[in-house]
Image 1 (cartoon, rainbow, N blue to C red):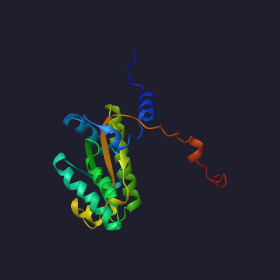
Image 2 (image 1 turned 90 degrees about the vertical axis):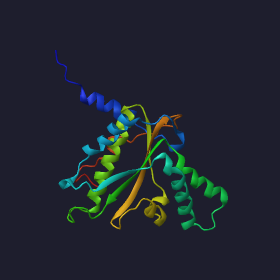
Image 3 (image 1 turned 135 degrees about the horizontal axis):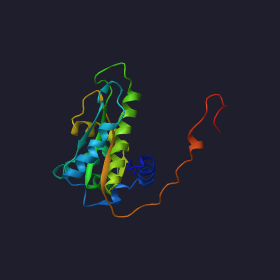
Image 4 (image 1 turned 45 degrees about the horizontal axis):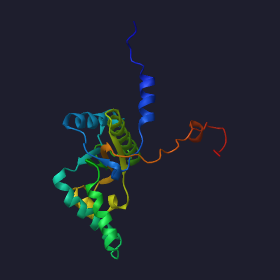
Length: 201
């Protein structure tokens, strides 16, 4: 009797199940310690040319959420000093969304100058996708979120980023309290183009 798992079917089912659940739709419980270890360990399977490990995740504990909320508010005021109080309050709310929150960071210079930023970002993106897939496998909702705040000086100072590092996005994980409308996924023909077949439509 063949007991080899049907990896293709399992992967297809899991990939189809993954969808973005926006942070304000994520509540408790979040992953426990063992689940979180499994989720973050999945990132290690990402492709990484020359094993530079050019990315890292910075987790935000519950006792840091108040401070992060103020960072989001200050980031808004950096780019819009005239922001209305309700806009600042809305920015502050972002610090408290989703039970698990981490910032994904990429280092443009770590290890080998011949490995360009594009390759490093692709590796980071693969790591993030692995995290989202494992979170889905464990029954959690998840999302990647960015926005203008990730480029702000106040956020870079708060997370202690080096000059060569850039914040890419936040990883949000929790129990899905509700789901938005699932997006229609593109067909393979929409994003695969054969060399020499002419310009894509």
